[in-house]
Length: 68
Image (cartoon, rainbow, N blue to C red):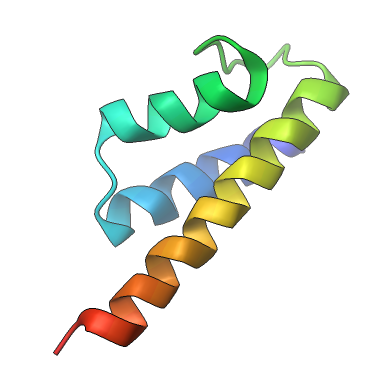
């Protein structure tokens, strides 16, 4: 379940213009490594989801305020 949420958020971040490197850096900042797989523990998944949602909001706010 959490893995599907993470995949959706990663796709949304890519749509907002984040590069793969930036998304990896967000995940690394959240849990200390790049490893996102089906066996991710619930605690790590919650941290990753929290960070990805924060950056999703930042990216959406940026587009709303600065795009023409």
